[in-house]
Image (cartoon, rainbow, N blue to C red; front, side, top):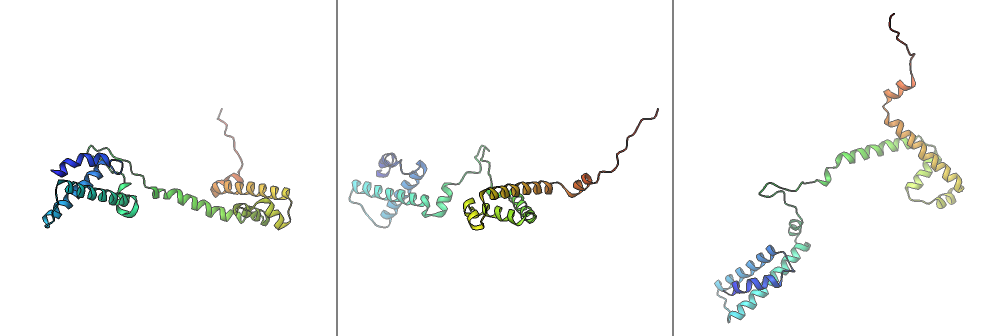
Length: 194
């Protein structure tokens, strides 16, 4: 009777702590603990004592649940942030696997391999300037280290990027197409018979 009488009040007072379902679960656990305590031979002085013991156990369960959801229990934290796969009506959440973008990773890795091969076709100065830019070195730092003027640095960097862009474009065209464009044979005109 005490548990039934206190239920609505405690759930309303502590509604800011957890979701309604979690509060119900914590209240049920606290009630079962009191019943188990009485079955094991424990006793209470009166209804007020039962009500206070129930409230203390309920607050203890809500704190435990909040700690578990905030990360103390990895499985509870994972379940808290999990999406449902579907409902009884058949409507569900579309699952997106973030690790499934393997094709994009493969393409990027292939482009990096191709880029590393093509960089070898640049001059030593062009490679040096591009490496400094990729490494985050400023123009002033590079120029003071190598004794270059800012204008030389700018021109070499611009030529390196342009040449690399051209090499990347050429690498995109299959070799058979490049050969056919380079060796155009004689053209013939076909005239209709008269």
